[in-house]
Structures are given as C-alpha cells and as structure tokens.
Length: 171
Length: 316
Image (cartoon, rainbow over the protein chains, first blue to last red):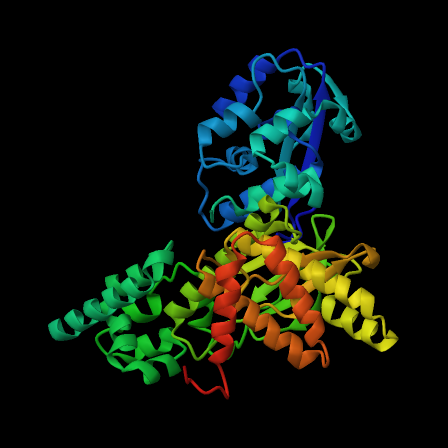
C-alpha cells in the first residue's frame, strides 16, 4: 500500500496465525531488533485502520514531532484513542500469550525492508489479510474506543475508530 | 534597541494574551521573542502597515541590526518558512494525491477530491490570507482546523451524520475527510423539489432539518455557517439522511444567544437563496422547538436577533 501523501513510501502488512513465540517477538520488538511494528490483530477491524495510523506516524516522523522514540512505536501509539503511550502498547501491541500477530513494515526510498527476514523470525503461519476480520474482537474494540450506541447508527465501526485516531491530539 | 525590545515584548505578550485559549503552538510567538530583530521589524510598524507586510523574511533582512538573524530565522511552520525566501509564491501547492482534482474554492479553503489510502476522500486546504499578519494567520488557521476536527468528532459521538476525519495536518492546516459519494446539497434538492412542485416533500425535509439542528444544538455545538449548501443528502436521497459539513467556523457554546444566531444565519440564507420558503422555515422551527429540550430560550433569542441586523429599527 503506498502512502499518497508521502511519495515513495509504502506500507506492507503481514498477518500471522498460530504464533508460538509471541513472548520472544515482543522482547525483540522492545529492544528494537525487529524492523516492524508488532500489533495485536484482535484490536484491528480493517487494514485501513493501520494505514491511517501509519500515515499519521510517518507525517509526525517527517516533521520531527513524534511522541514516541521510533516510527514503529509511533504507529502503535497512533492506534490508541488516548494519549497514554504505555497503555497503547499494552492494548495494541502484542502480549506474551498471543497466538496471532500483525506486522507492519514501512519502506521508503532510503530504507527497504526484507520481508522474508522478518517473516522467518516468526514461528507461525503467514495468512492472508482477508482473515483479519475473524481475528477481530469487536466487543473489545468497541470498549477500547468507547463507541456510543448512537454512533453505530450513523457509520461503520471503522469510521468511528478512524475519527478518534485522527482527532486524538486536538481534543 | 532596549526601547524597541521592551515595545516588542509588550506587543508580543499582548498578542499572546489575545490568542490565549487556543495557543497550542508557542512557536511563532516564542520565535518572535527570541529574535527581537525580525520581530521588531514586524512590530515597529503600526497595525495596518504591519499587516500589509506579508514577507517577514526579506523585511527582517531589511533591518540593519537584524541582518544575520533575519533570513536565518527558523520558523517552525513550514508555510511561513517557504513564504520567506520565495517572495513570488502566492499559495501552497496542492497535496500530492493521485486523482486529486479541485472541486471548489471557497473564501476559506480549497476543496479537493481524491483517493486517500485507497478511499475516496475530500481534502480541505486552508488558503493563507496574505493581508493578515503571518503569526496571526498561522494561529487562526490552526484554530479553525482544530475546531473543525473537534466538532466533527463531537457530531459523530452524538450520532449526528458528519464526514469521518481521516487525517489532520497541522503543518499545512489541511484536513482529509470522508467523501460522501453521490451526495446532493440540500440547496440543489430544494431547487429540484420546488421545480417539480413537490410541497409535501419540502415540508418533510424542513422537519428533518429542524430535528437535525435541534440535536446539534442540544450537544451545545454551534455550526457557525449554516446554509443549505452546507447540508448534504446522503444517497439514497429518499431516506433524507442529512449530513452536516463545513465546520470551520464552529464552536462549542451552551448560550441560547449563539444558538439563536446560528438559526438566524440559516434563516437568512434560506430565505434569500430559496424564494417562497417561509412556510418551510416555519415548519423547520416548529420541529426544532419540539425536538430540542432547551428550545424555549433559543426561539426567544431568535426573535430578538431578528429585530437586530440590517435595516432594522432598534426601538423597544
């Protein structure tokens, strides 16, 4: 997926199921030895959600106004509806006993990412993104983003989520 | 120099106070304080002359003592920075989005349609007003963009149909929204209904509008620019799903005065754009009064506001 506002930038999403080494992966991500953002797919309803978060993260990175220290951490933070970084990691990042992992890779002209390299570090089965809806925990998502019942009538869950993500810093 | 500095800091703090509540970027004021040279160039000239000067860069360079500090002044905002060295550039370039085409140019902003991350979106880019002082311009632009984003979120939370916000860019003060595909403005719809002579549909539409506004005002949200071209009908048109757009002048207020003024703006726009719609607007107000819990004082204020305005005698 290319990011239109940032020519030359592309986003790659990899979904893995039946993952056995979630704990090890999380440690590697914390150290920064994995070139990607490790996200809990239960909190994601659609790839568009990730793209919006990534777009915002890349934008902030380019103007030097990120709230976290790395681009990948910023992507995870952008997914959260509130401004608490550690909370964002807890809810949207992967935990030690997760069995599914969504990895987000960002490439631009200066930096390319080796997909096989990243994929080989995961002890699990790579599956198509179409399986994402099955892994989504809708109730948990609604609770996390505090979606009101009248909101559900006027738009999709995805619309509400994206709205909250993009206006989080103004409210 | 000391006198100039004192004058600068005096004026700067006055400006800071005026912009008080909405300051989220001390950048411009802060930068102006740090470099008294260029700021001095901007402040020494009284109001109108200062405003007429729209290139702080070269003006700063013109001041002898400012010399090195002037052109080297690092403005955190990209726009001001670009405006500095490039004197000829009149406006910011359109965003590099595929299939982006200009849809409309209003007084406030340019509206583009295009694809954003694979979805049809509308991009609103605020037009910088060159007659304004750059620091004020930046602050105002940012405030309006933030207000728009905030109001859109508030609408969504309350269950009022409004476009979803995809991305807000505080650097260029642009906002990327959901595109309501194949929508019709209420203005066009009313015109077509009037042409076909469909009066019952007009009344039903008016009732729907009254209901929508009542819900919005009950959330203490003031639109600020209510016209029939700022309300859209989402397809299918028969369902009369009304979508509010263009919240650039919106704000939060519980005062009946502000709500009354909001309704008055709509009334004026309504009656001037659509002839013979007095009954329609009456129906709108009736539904408004019925739906809104706090409508009593608002309607009273509306009557009071009507007595003000143009060509009105202020008697009684």
